[in-house]
Image (cartoon, rainbow, N blue to C red; front, side):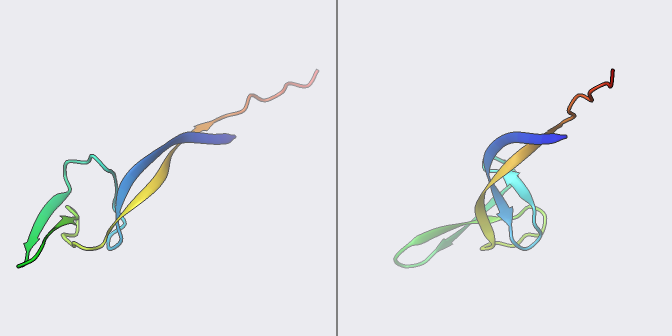
Length: 72
């Protein structure tokens, strides 16, 4: 058996280990406005934590069976 797959860019929540594509529409935004700057935080839809989201590159694995050789 051998494996290969496509590399994708996504987000991971370091609190609950949710992995999702970057374009996942379920990530929520929280805006933090101070006197001198505005910050946008991503919020995990599962555990509701913010500030613990990281960008990752991951592989979607496809497994293939190698054909078995028949003995003559």
